Amino acid sequence: MSTAPEARTTEAAGSVAAAVSVRDVDHVYGRGTSAVRALGPLSLDVPAGEFLVLVGPSGCGKTTLLRLIAGFETPTSGTVTVRGETPRPGRQSGVVFQQPRLFPWRTVGDNIGLALRYAGVPRAERPSRVARLLDRVGLTGTADRRVWEISGGQQQRVAIARALAGDRELLLLDEPFAALDALTRERLQEDLRRMGHETGSTSVFVTHSVDEAVFLATRVVVLSRRPGVITLDLPVDLPRTGLDPDELRGLPEYAALRAETGAAVRAAA
Ligand SMILES: Nc1ncnc2c1ncn2[C@@H]1O[C@H](COP(=O)(O)OP(=O)(O)OP(=O)(O)O)[C@@H](O)[C@H]1O
Image 1 (spheres, rainbow, N blue to C red):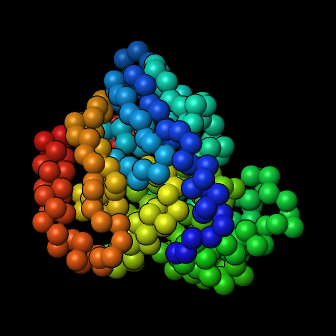
Image 2 (image 1 turned 135 degrees about the horizontal axis):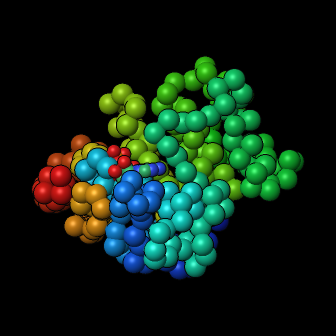
């Protein structure tokens, strides 16, 4: 994935302030005897440019936290802001889910073009923007392919390009690679890691995989069992360039971070 002009715009925009601020948040689904306390109390700041990975046992509230940051949910108490504003779906962030959720009978270009249209990008500008976004996710020249014709990994790349459309300052990813085969998953991890470094964009990524967390993150946050609270907040200061993935995974620091994260996840479960 290469650094396109679109990426540099995001980098410039992202360097201004803390991208995400979560303050004293509690989140409860339902009421009375059927109430489920999913999250909190939880406070977290995500500075611009950070690649934050959330890990924790099933049901600990990872998706809930992502949905609060996306603006799909409003916290029961406390506040969530994205660059100082209350988040609104599709406004400040792009979201990538476990399934790509594309229109399969339409072309790759149409799927991304639709997101650009919603973002208010004029029709005449859309083809060049689509091409730049496809370059960025390693799918140069695929705009005219139908979604059903391309592989699952390629579809997930399209979903990432769509989430980036409209110069969103924040990328939210909810186990985006969980349904992919191991080799495709590794390739996408490598590309996403490189892209995060090259563009300086801000991401919050949810996973169950400790290795995926340490590989991708500049910071790992582990949540406890429900209601999720932070049990580990770990900076990941590994080289972002100059090493291939095997060399990176072979570093003693990598092993130490993996061990510390794994122990925290096991303790949380
Ligand atoms: N709409 C809802 N109504 C009621 N309870 C919900 C709702 N959404 C989630 N929950 C509950 O809130 C808790 C947290 O769910 P959430 O999906 O955020 O966890 P998670 O950590 O993402 O789980 P997983 O790793 O299994 O995807 C769970 O107990 C879940 O059953």
